[in-house]
Image (cartoon, rainbow, N blue to C red; front, side, top):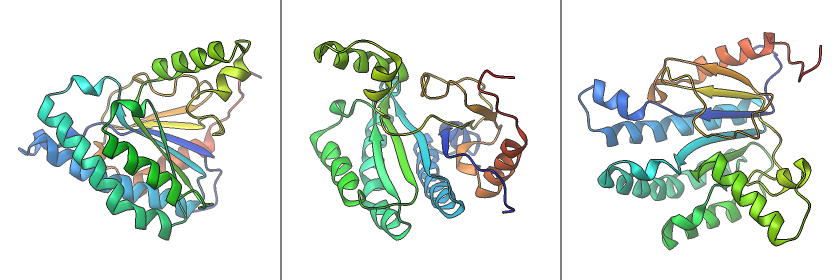
Length: 228
């Protein structure tokens, strides 16, 4: 990839796993399995090209309304993902961080998430942030409740410091796959001045090459942050 200005923080809404599978006559769960493979490809690519933060929308607060069997499969897939990816994180100097209300998950999954964070805490390259049982409105509500419990003034800075993403810079570029053009309750606070890119590609078919093309487009955009 030629030298270009890359985003410090890239966020992706990984959409289209189910539709990709359905169009191929496969069970929706196959789409999620393929989507997990794409997570590895994109994460390791971002680490190689110098992106510092990659936040991926893995499971939303609304996803619990999906069919019970699909939700159960996703929970098992998450466990399998963390177990298989730990070595990938360590080999690529990738730090892992989870955001969202993790209390809704099983104790077993919570422990696996916590252990993955701890075992990668020393890594200094890319930080991969997975949004799990995450919804931005829920995140902001929880942040405000924390301020109230601490009897702190409700200011922008205090809210920011009590979000799940505290310590992580705002998003520079948001990508959504699968052709949908909306942000779906994702990082509403953090994308205030993010550039956005929507692609028709389903997540299982999203490649590092397409990401590079999007990053080249990002390099041409003039970011004024409300100025002239």
